[in-house]
Length: 98
Image (cartoon, rainbow, N blue to C red; front, side, top):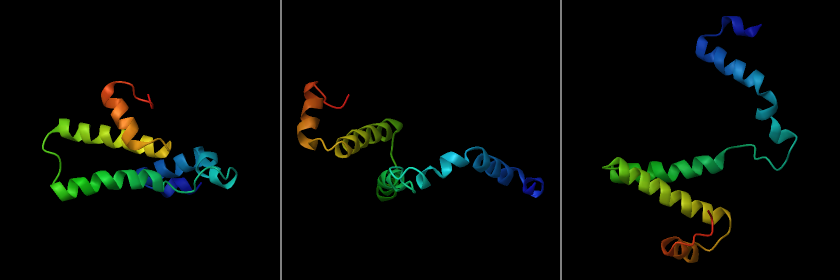
């Protein structure tokens, strides 16, 4: 096979591509599956920009809080739920998304 000359990292990747071929190519058969992972990359970009602009988070708790807030906001946006109304509900104790 072509795997015998590959280094360990490359071999691992080739094996994973072979074993999960149907997963990797699912977008070709099911058009509802996106062919890229841009949504994930866009979500990560927000955190990376925040890190660059402020030089990172001073405390781990600040990092966790930022990610929690971002998760709630992005979930509300993706579900087309009103942002302000649902953030108010969250503070009152009656969140709509959980």
